[in-house]
Image (cartoon, rainbow, N blue to C red):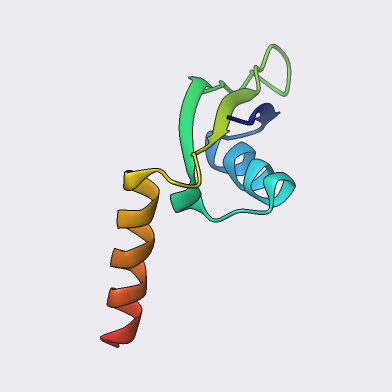
Length: 77
């Protein structure tokens, strides 16, 4: 499985960057927040958020279930 670790100001920003880099949707990956990050005082001593994003196996039951559920929900609207 392909994994990448990225840092950004917030975990959400790091996740979005990883999704763009991997060119996938959120349901196609497993996300692990390694460090939530913290803001510093007056911009000093802060720490970036760090996440590990792993591409799920193409045949993964979880990925297939999530994609089907998302697709069905979109059809209902």
